[in-house]
Image 1: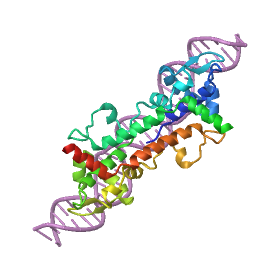
Image 2: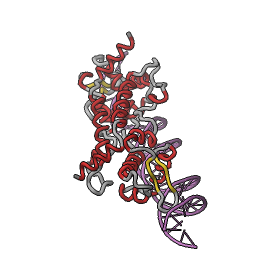
Image 3: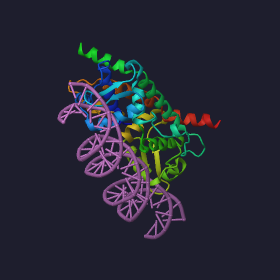
Length: 140
Length: 140
DNA sequence: CCGTTTTCCGAGTAATACGATAGGTTTTAT
DNA sequence: ATAAAACCTATCGTATTACTCGGAAAACGG
């Protein structure tokens, strides 16, 4: 039940961009430095977020990345789904078929569905704006 | 955010034992057959559950495994923790230190703590008895 | 006592994903 | 022109997963 660094780094980077929202393109170099992430690895991750439409990039000197939407409209769940795929503790929740149980009904499946729902509920209720607010609160 | 088969098989096997609670030792062969799990692999998993004190074993012919406690007192969370270690989406929740953030405070960490709490809440609220009851409901 | 059933134990192994690293190309502000 | 930055593809070591294999030890039934 571990999150990979893809998810963690993705959220950290997006949080960093949210903190600098409205300040023009932010270079990955600075994000990687502040968040303590390998710059080259982060490049790959940002590619996914760009293709998913959550960030846009400006190439060339003084270029970088910016959020395409207001931080209030992007949730942690959005980012996790891009970085890690569908939120589901087991695959049979995605594919639908539960091959293990011959009777066609899987008792334990109900448990995993409840877990999925509770994770989804938490992640979708936290926006990038919420995260930046927490940061301000802490600094005060 | 995937559960490994260790967790899934562990819960499936314990659920199977709960269905046969009070009927003497149940052989792994029969559990593996009913649940569609490799018998030899399941052996390894049961070793962990035995060491953790949730099942006891009887060796020799007509031997097998039995729950050490009433199904109502064993939760899915108990099993998952044995099979997969502490429930935590990221390691820094276990170790305590969050090396990434230099200022010593990790904003995203709060998110992962909330996720952990919601997962824990769900898993600890479902007992093996609950699962067997669902099974009966379905059969009716 | 013997043979079968079962748990128990340790080693090995193919496949996969993770977390990078490397080396280059394009694009663009200055 | 130069430097900064995004972009792209490939490679690679490490670890984990989900097994398999081969046996040893225990216990029951006859």
